[in-house]
Image (cartoon, rainbow, N blue to C red):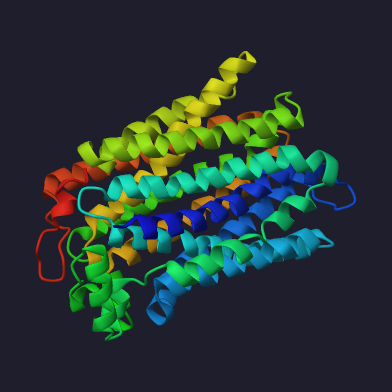
Length: 435
């Protein structure tokens, strides 16, 4: 059973989501705190600093995994963003706050691709998309928790209190993961710990990865080279472009939705409620997208989801009755977050085990450039007084992702996914179902 792996990774990703979304939830109150001195433009810079840290974390996760294993990376990442959250709560000025968010970003960025890769490794055949979708519901449950904490705490206790809550995973998640999380079998094989891999294989009823499927040292370089071998460079490039546009959209909306809605005339409580609702939609979307992708393929689902995201996000700029706005925000959440998750699911299907973690790490890592740009762009729009353009620009990013995925689908169809092979030239069966 993969239940233990999924449950523990879910807990970690929940706290990852809480730490990620808490900045957006606290942002309106931070901007109103004149003593702290955070301007709209600087707020965008701080958001980008955190996502730049996530970029570094995502790209470093594979190398760290080679040394300490996926379990060790998950623990290290959780400790990093938990401790950094405490420093954010205590920061006397914007500079130190930004430095702490950078460190938090390192942990946040390294945790997610590692958790996805571990769940993909332990997932039974035919359920990988669903279990990745289930895992990603944790991110949005964390977002709901962040907005709920904002509604409860910000008005009476100030923005620093929500960052103090971010220290909790250090005492809740870390002990459980250290005690119960199994290590990657591929890592154990790479380190010559065949007996430990055999015990996990029997416990979870999974085959032991072949020695060639485990990457490490020079194997990591080989896995990266595989992403660009033969015709695979086209597929890799299209995944990277899609991830850039998708994460620009995800992190831009996550950071600026409360402020954008407040600029439309909603009070702080309502603006935070929209963040709660969009994450509720995100949870529903993960279950829906995962189920459909297991039948029709994650690329097809992601294309439709990004197109619907563009329509929903663009419509948020319209002045609608409050109940209609809540419905629209929920719908945007259903499609917005799970569209990007289906990109990760497609990567997990297309690439073989030997390069899968590297492919996921670099797809999320390159996407972090979009995650850096999205919050920064939102800050610049607010600083220039052009926040009314925000939803339209974010909708355009969704259309770009739709376009790159359409091209990817054509490439996969034309090659018959034959460019996606393992080291011995064997076509990966999962790739045939990816599009």
